[in-house]
Length: 257
Image (cartoon, rainbow, N blue to C red; front, top):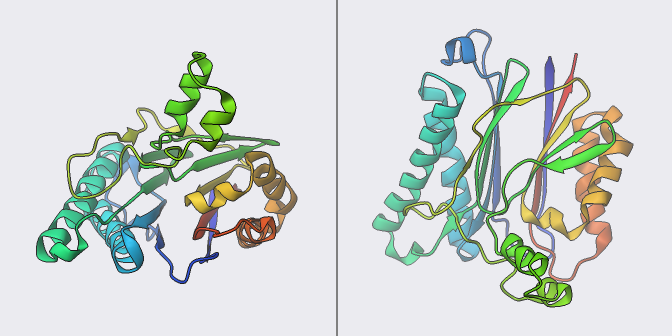
């Protein structure tokens, strides 16, 4: 399978950018995974902690995650866990050196593509989508309060309108902040990839448009390649005109022959 990718980002209504994204392509015969060798590693982090702190955190998370994954040998799942630990430790070290950065952190998605499969680890609320044959699904867990509120709705303990407007909806239950991680989504089994699949890592700025609109954009532009698809997703967010639009970053990976 041939993997192609593109990264696009927008500051939205912010005066600064707190998202970071890194894509690493293994040199031919140069990955350390042996039989489980990784072909492509995609990483996305959405920083928090203000203008300086958020940008520092997301950059540190991406760089340290990549460095540890590339250096580590073995199975992809083990390498992803080790890379997450390294990224989390790096945030803790930075806060220890610069106490004024206390409270900074980032969400994280790390996806390793190898042998027709994808392995991932994620912390926070940044979504990981798979588009396949006209249908789209979120693969990773949402570590915000939104799923908790939705369960209360299902149980009849909260009205749908109250859940939608609840100010706690976007609060994170877990993030990479240099401390023990409360929630980690580390896929137990690799996800099989098919020809024509489109995988999207995104910061939560993409949530300004509904999932059905994200799927529509992918369907319309995927044949033009990942660059066109990524640019169209960013443009769709801009066209939505959400007030105080958050930073939006997308990493689009297409699976072809």
